[in-house]
Length: 155
Image (cartoon, rainbow, N blue to C red):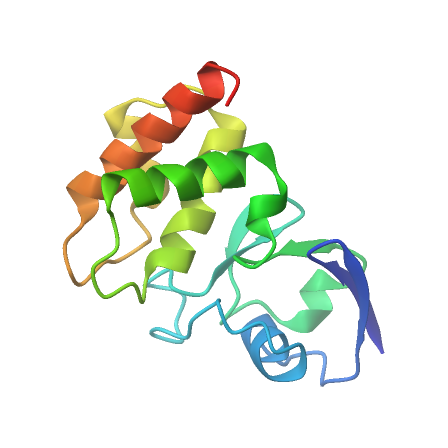
């Protein structure tokens, strides 16, 4: 049994220790906002936070999450940064197909938790592992700046 906390709730998983966290989240816990993209940790669609750090859940075994806090897209709005990023995403009208957006938002939240006022270079570096086939990179960058501005104003 592997014990961890998912979106603030204690969870016990009985899967194989090497089972990808992505499948435990989607199949066992029915948290389907985290998407399967490439399965090789290259596209970022499966990004979640593990103790506040962005990780690719398709390549992270559940054993690596033992005793840790996992935050998914379903739980990110519980915090001030998550609320600001999601509001900015809507304000800027970022999503097109939407498939990559949960991973994009998770990476953006991790960035803003570390850097309150990121430069374009900071954003590009933090988001470089997230692929958007629709090409909304300019909107993503604008939304991150908008969220940073909102957070700076206390929102």
